[in-house]
Length: 385
Ligand SMILES: Nc1ncnc2c1ncn2[C@@H]1O[C@H](COP(=O)(O)OP(=O)(O)OP(=O)(O)O)[C@@H](O)[C@H]1O
Picture 1 (cartoon, helix red, strand yellow):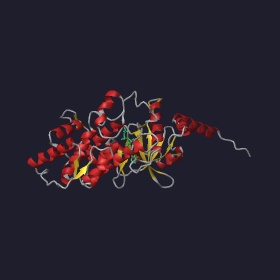
Picture 2 (tube, helix red, strand yellow):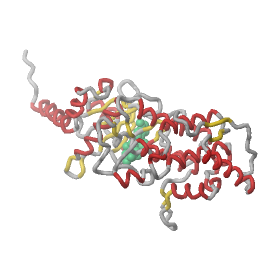
Picture 3 (cartoon, rainbow, N blue to C red):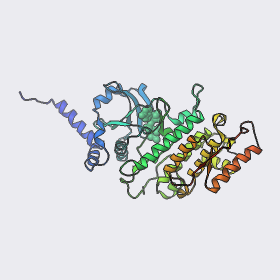
Picture 4 (cartoon, rainbow, N blue to C red):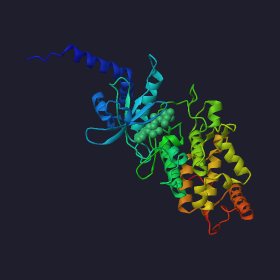
């Protein structure tokens, strides 16, 4: 017997095909055939599966909302818990092509990555009205919330801060080195760092990231990123470099040190940038006055100082003078392993550490007057690891 499709069914199939095309399905296939990424690992979900997983995009399932869309908590048929990002493609009546590109970009980038500190993309759905991305579910919120909305139940100890900084640095170094071409994240900020069940960092949100292979010139027509984290050199020149992610990482590092937001907009005060506040304090040897009280309480002083000096180097206005991501990752590991008993081989750093130690040994305030261990090891600050 010949199977005849009902007109409604035919219409549904055609609509799904239309959405697939509009959502960049062909663009993705193109990348697939040119062998970029490892897209066969990415599962294509049906729109039915997505509806079931999110209980028809129930408002109660919303985890958060970003520039690119809404993120829902969902459960797949096999029982696994996932985060589903529904892209914001339709502005008024116009379908935003730029967002399709960002969406496909995220799929291609994330399909090449397998690192414990980068959020895993499980698949996507292109046949729904707007495209959807399916990620592993990361249960403990963002680093931004952990730093800025601290609760009494969980204190973000110095040990956790240093470990999280190392994990982010390792992930960023991995992005530059592990895939077929270096990947720049381009929007590093604490709200793009998710925390798993053990409060391990997972770098997320690759919508604006770029593989150097995809964009050989590094020149973009539109400067993208987040105010407060953006490399000033990139802002001026539109030239994004490996060192631009290093700058944004430096901002996250000082957020961890001070517990303060990159841009503070207190109504009574003028807008203040954390970077200049931090750099001024370093200049005036008053770092310990601006640290998060938790850091002052439980962080070893020398460890805090060398991390602050590293942050200062990451925030250098001249990109070339910033350390590489590899240096940053290795120095942080070294600081942790040596318990902060490190002395820079390069003269400037060493004298700066000495200055700081002296400054609060002669000026001890209650929080600063702890003994500093002297059994230092040599720290190859300037060597190319
Ligand atoms: N894999 C995930 N697991 C759990 N929650 C997630 C996951 N991905 C995102 N979220 C939640 O959804 C929120 C929005 O994420 P999204 O990446 O879309 O936006 P954003 O980073 O906040 O903003 P923007 O895209 O404008 O930079 C996050 O802040 C987080 O709370």
